[in-house]
Length: 456
Image 1 (tube, rainbow, N blue to C red):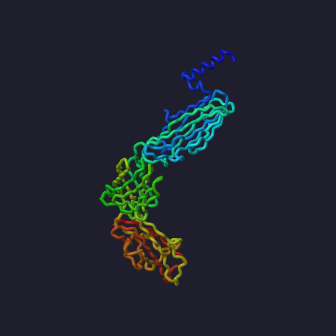
Image 2: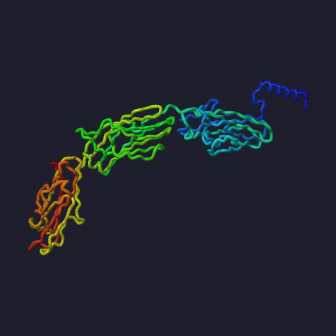
Image 3: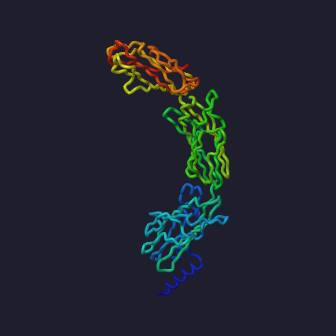
């Protein structure tokens, strides 16, 4: 070897030994590890964990000797807090991001826990060469306890194949304590809950709370009616007209509270760090159809209490019961027809069912109107004394009639049924009887009957 070359090698060695040259210039294989979110520590906030947001580390390898090499990682110090609690190995998971390298082969592309033994994450091409890769990390929130920081360390190792070249970098890992717990009312944003009940059309009301950052203490939500639901006449809505149902994403199974009661009631009780709580209001159709029509307004208050804070939420509630006042008639399949009438035949009876639905809470009457007598297709009429009717209420409590026995059918508007004083919905039967008589024309007879409602 020439003396000049020997002198050059001796000078380079002396400069490296004196620390006057950078490590990259002296070594043939070096690596760096830098968190993409900045700084020299891989920091993961608990809010990131709650939202399942990963944090990434960019690893750069500089290789100048043309030799193949491999890169490894391991959790050299497991995550622990200042109380001495050590998280289990499965608490930290990792994977390499496909396409983040330019050459060589990535390993560990599937999410798996970060071991305390060496885990190969990259292997260079046969000719070595500088490269880079990105590694992603995710902390399992269900493994965390308390509201403290957890600290650990990751070591990255680049190792040349066939030589003794090795470079190692240590990266601190920190899981930061949770931010201050937060309680939000997601629905209704306006703090006004409006529900409407109409026959065969029902609506649901929803109150949606979200709490996050709870350090692990008890979380309780209490419901209280601070202003009863009343109409303009200060009448309260029936207790069981509205039913309350509680659901949550993770905290508890579906909970049925039954009717909306006046006393303070705990609707949620748990210990989770975060959860969504859904308070649903549903109409009880059996009770709602009996509720007096009108608009009922009131206020609910929810007291949300966690181990770190308390908040109160007041919700204005408006429940509308749509007025119903209608009569329906169930007729025989062929209508009210008397067929094949002969002078010698026994009495013929046809039956109708009349149903009245009302939530006005006012007494009413059912009016029968028969504008034309019972006639056949030729226009021949039945004598009025031989065409009669009577009314059979479903029960005395539903109302009364002036026609409990058969009487001639009047050819005019005639009230035939009277409700109770509360105007309760009712149902009754009307029986129409045709008596044959000498000289009656043989054949079919029919008429048109209408029913209407009137307030009393």
